[in-house]
Structure formats: structure tokens, C-alpha cells
Length: 308
Ligand code: CP
Ligand code: NVA
Image (cartoon, rainbow, N blue to C red; front, side, top):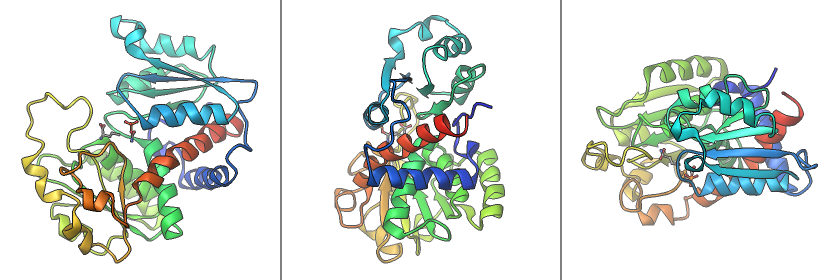
């Protein structure tokens, strides 16, 4: 059966761990694995802009011996009525895998609905699961493991990163705390699912209001943009309610000594994170950005070689 990676919990906790093990191997011996040699192609669709995702997939697919076909969907029929299900069926006749960055999760699900090759979520409004593989790889590198560690995410707890931290963090056995302002709560179904997962992995998931209570003693302090792609003109005040949730030196001081700081980037310096913290000794954000490459290579290799 074809395996897709549409959200974090499309892998089991053991499978997530296997992909992260492979990502570490690939990072240590970067050009050894060539499962796409031939070359086989992977099509990567973007409904939204990108720097890291685009370049890490394009680079990673090349390093796996394959050919990345990057498509900005404005140049396709996506916006003028071609069914995404039909597009997925067509592209699966050419490509060994399909990667898609889009808005609604239903668009990704539609593209994947009748496709016999792996489909990978490169960010939707609901989830950013490839980012979480990179984040967890970074946590493993910096802290020696994930199980039992506390990861606190502060800011927009209604966004894709918050949801993916809840699911993927729980899968990795972490104690995940999400703290954000009223009106920006995570989806209840995602929190409930993360709780179920945590019950099996020894992790936990809590939603809090107070950023200092959430950050207290955390080994990982993470944040993300207060305005996600597509929200720029929605008329919602995305500055005032979020200001108490800025990751700055005071909030970091509440975390565990030696805590690491994560941000998926792009950062809005001076909003959700200060220069001092982003550029400081506890910041792991550029390793985190690098790990997109290794984690996604491992994911593609795992989906293509062994499990589809
Ligand atoms: N973190 C991330 O997904 O960055 P891009 O939007 O630049 O791809
Ligand atoms: N939450 C952000 C993540 C960007 C990588 C967004 O969706 O724009």
C-alpha cells in the first residue's frame, strides 16, 4: 500500500524514529544514498512561497540521485479549475513521489486521493510535518534524545507548527506545552489525537495561557511567525495579543539551563523572537534549517525504498 505523509501521525512513533535514525546516517555520509538514481523524478508543487522547503527538497532529491521538478502552481491549471485529484493521477504517471505545499489540508488530501506514489505535505494551514522531522533531528543532536524532554512552543497555537509540535512531539515521547493568547487555540481534535499518542509514548501535551509557566524548565523553547502565509490581509490583530509570547532573554531564562531555541524560519526579528535570542548561543535554528535537507531525504528514501 502506498504510504503518504500528509500529517505527522501518518508515521507511527517507531517509524518516525526510524526515519530520524536514517536522517542522522544521511547527514553523516551525505552522498552515499541514491535511491532515486536513474534518475527518478519527484514533483514538488508550491501554492505558497518558500525558501527552505523548496531548496532543501530540490537539493535533497538531487543528492538522492533523482530529478526534482519544482512547479509553482500559478503556472499550471490548478487555479483555473483542474481537479486536484485529476492532477495527482496525471503526475503520478511521471513522478516517483509528489510533494505539495498548499493552504487547506483538504487540497492536499484531494491531490493524494487516487495516487499510487507517496505524497508528502510540504506545509499546509494545518500541519508542517517535514519541518518537525528536522526539528526532532535537531533535538536529538543537541539533547541526545527526545523522550522525556519538555518542548514548549509559544505564540500562535492555532497554526500549522503548533499542531505539528503537538503530534510529532508526542510521537517522540516529549512533554509538549503550547502557550498562546485567547482566540488562537490549537484545534481540539489535534490536541486530543496528540494526547492519545502521548499516552502510548510516555509523553504529554498541555495547552496553557501563561508563557512563563509554559517555558519553566523546558529543554526546548520554540516559536513561529505570528502571521502565517495567507493571513496577511485577514484583518486580525496579530501583534497586540502575541506580544507577551515573544521569545526573548527573559522568557529563555525561565527555561532549563542550556535549553535550545527553535524557529522554523523565516523569523520576524523583534516580533516573535529577538535578535539576541535568535543569534545567541542557545539558538539551534540554523542547524534546524539544515536538517530539513537530511530529514526530507530520509523521509523520501524511507517512503520510496521500503514502505510503499
Ligand atoms: N520553514 C520553512 O518551511 O521555510 P520556507 O517557507 O522558506 O520553506
Ligand atoms: N506558520 C508559518 C510557517 C512558515 C514556514 C506559515 O504557515 O506561514
